[in-house]
Image 1 (tube, rainbow, N blue to C red):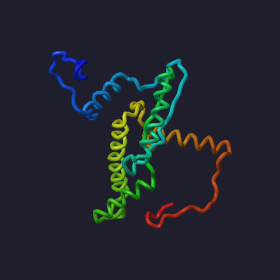
Image 2 (tube, one colour):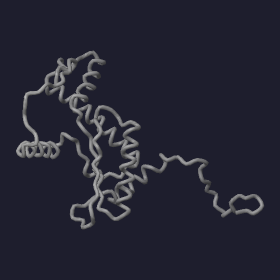
Image 3 (cartoon, rainbow, N blue to C red):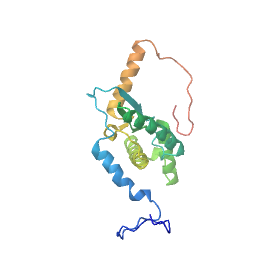
Image 4 (cartoon, rainbow, N blue to C red):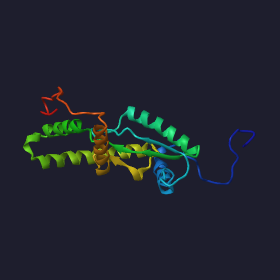
Length: 197
């Protein structure tokens, strides 16, 4: 430090620091280092105490919003804190099919393009919904990466994946077998626009 001017003493180097910090210049490099290191991966055979959070899977109806960012930031704080305390920590990411809500947004897109669901066969419409799901799932995952979420990305799930669907059927079967849920005749809400319950 120069005592007369208060400025840093010259080191003979001509490299100048930028006037402002631009996060996008560094984020991809840091993210790649994190992913390559396996720092966010939990291991089933690890003897340490376990700590896990599953992201309440966001619907693939649209991109993430500020509420998702807040929720995921709070989860990330908890996950990183437990990692630092030595827990075998799993933060599992995923997305949710959102069923009728996803169907509704796809139908709105079709209407905006001058067609409707009934113009397509069942398989064709399911294919259109799958395209929407793939597009928005990729957007959501990219947004989580951009936020620096320390998820175990090797375990990313979609609620309609075979492993998830099997787990849901098994859970309902056990609940039914234990008489904790039952089948009965009840009123349901009917959506007159999509013509479904």
